Image 1 (tube, rainbow, N blue to C red):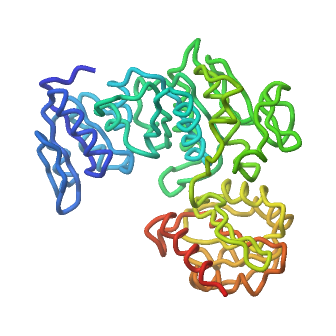
Image 2 (image 1 turned 90 degrees about the vertical axis):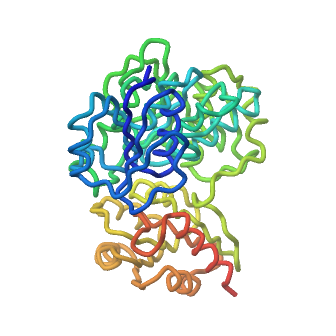
Length: 433
């Protein structure tokens, strides 16, 4: 992409927007950074900042290229106003891709993206192939391409928001973890959400690889495909007796790593598959993973107290993540769930809840809805806060149980984000006597 001398407008002054503005300016473009906030700080050099930008401002703006930050609704009135007089509209990730020449391993899905992204980076870096986690996790791709030493490869986590605004982005390896309802407060239908994610495959061609969870309907693909699952032995990657196999050949014994739970086994399968495709040998996989710990807030063991495990799965911000966390437990569960109303339908969760949980404690904006539903299959208690939920959970457990914080929705009714929620849970658990 040649943007020297062109007028580039960037919407959103968060980290992604500022990175896009800096990259465009470094390529000789005339860049203005717009944001609706009262003030824009940390403005990159040679970039004009325009705070308090309104729809009316957008309608009067004219540019050659409009770059949208992923946090801004692509199909909302705000973007539409700026796009009206723009020659081309892309997202920050697409802009970064235009200036990157290395291997791209793209990862999308409703759940498991971040752990898989970290695993890809870990395996490749351990084996001498410079790799950086970026995109929806880590740093924006536009920052990566401005580094003094640009990595040979990237583990690029891609949200549906970022995929909405791609143009030429073509992963050498595209990973599809899974799909379930999420972000229904942004999308008008689940089909719109899925179609956004499916764009990860649209530019792939012969010689590229798609790694897909067995049973996922992603339509016809041009790329070569590899499948994975822990639920059967019919896929290319499968799990048997605690070991991961690829087409019948053992690749990894999970007990030799710090991975626990079926969801983490699937994350490992997808990451291993991607790394094998870019030249890593099977013999080098285990040494790459020794000592690797899954990210915080993802079925993270906080402590064991009187034989009860306390697990922080605050990253479970949708039903699929909650279902996966429950499915992975071998102990009777006291579930703590609840948070912001996202318009999700929890009825399909009831069979899993009945099978794995002995009690549920619900809190937050959707507590009444969850209590009415969960009470149909298990004993359910409603409280106001997460602090109250942790205190109550200790009274409901016996030796050999697990207390699982897996909210099943976002945290923004009471917390700044899932990390804040998980940190509060950890602190409360560590206070227990």
